[in-house]
Image (tube, rainbow, N blue to C red; front, side, top):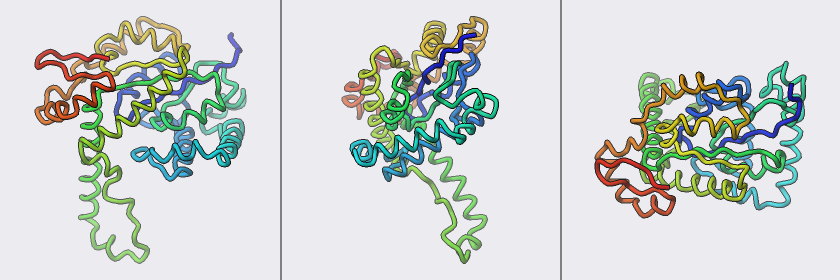
Amino acid sequence: MNTKTRAPVIIIGMHRSGTSLLTRVLQQAGFFMGVGASRNEEAAFTNAINAWLFREASASWDRPESFDWLLEDETLRPWLLDYMDGIIRGPASLRFLGIRRGLRGGMPGQTRPWGWKDPRNTYTLPLWLELFPQARVLHITRHGVDVAASLRARRRGVFDKRVRRYRSMRAWYRNHPGAPTRRGFAPQVRCHTLEGGFSLWESYLQRAREHVRSLGPNAMEIAYEDLLRDPARLLPQALEFCGCPHDIGRMTAAAAGFRADRAHAWQHNEELRAFAASVADRLARLGYAPPAVNAPGRTG
């Protein structure tokens, strides 16, 4: 049994970029991503740390810009790192590791492939790398128009659901003596429009690629579209990068569930094609070019 401790693999990338698809395959191959993962394959423990860091910066995942001010605050940063170090080495880490794994050592002492996923890692990564300097970073990308459309659709769904609930309980909410008690009608107002979601995608992608360039061989970038179209080539690469064993049968079964038609879904919608044309220059600067009609593909 290999008892050598392993550095984590930290998964970064914009929301709605297909990270959950790949992380499910990694977990099937033995990659540990924490106990009590959400339906998005994110551990509550590491999510809570990132959320706390964002609050310290008065930031949110859809308004991450102020996090840079936190990173630049040299008086604050050492205390944040000291607190984070205590959390990941102390009993709180059992919320990530579970009792049995935690008793064998804290987060820095894991011997099997492990890590965590959270889009906010894209911004908090410099702090995590100070705690885990040998960490590897896996970046998942997706076309910005598809991301913007997905963000808008998700927000509309949340808004419709909360408005229906408010209508059914309107008198109670309006006359509640402790009001306001509601979380709100819909968060992420930036994602209400395609432009808002697209500009957020630009910010995340630019930041993530800065990390990938600076980390060299300790970072890997995979395009969601390429993964859907060529899983036989990319899945073994991703598994090797994360230190997971290859199981041809398991990989073949996982790839059978991939839907290649979800790659560049924006091409099949007139509104999204028009929006892609309107941001063609911005897409090109990030390595994407709208393909010719009836000739789907991706450059960069």
